[in-house]
Picture (cartoon, rainbow, N blue to C red):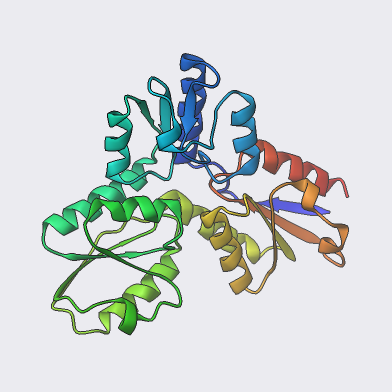
Length: 280
């Protein structure tokens, strides 16, 4: 089987930083003494590896004993979470992605400037839940949102987006908003360039192959977005976490396969998959 790999794939710098911070924290404070408020990143293989190294990723803030260390995962949290952690006497280790922090700061700044803040994103995603906490009132809209019902009229709107969304999707949502008679709309681009590069690389690879494999956590927003883009390109696409989920019929009648991976997928998962696929 001929296998071609996307030039831009796998770990982004934000994910690399978060994993390194988590590993350093466990080495410094000891196994069992660092508790993360949920999975550090959305990749089950990395999550399991960190747990084997001694990181607890099932933390509930109110249940963490004073004196322990609480790790803020890459997706970030609302500002009151920091206040609560300090109030409980916890040592805070912050692994929030710098681009998520930038989105948080953008929301706060827009609110202080008098804009009604609108975030284009998945309201159930942890990043979005954290970011919208930086202003008293934020309207969250996404694909399928009824703008007439969900977006109240304000003369001045300030727009941001979930960092892992595709540029095409965000542009489409902004276009719909601009069709409405707002006096002023201020847009701050909070999209992650690393994610955008991976999306563009995957779409370019679609033109060269018969079938696409996108590797990454099934709960990873940026990985799911990449799968969707490849499918919209018209290429048969499979979203797998590891080689264990591969089935021979996926490449039946195919000659060339393309492989890429989300921004939270480690290189060792990609290498293992490619090596085994090429051996067929």
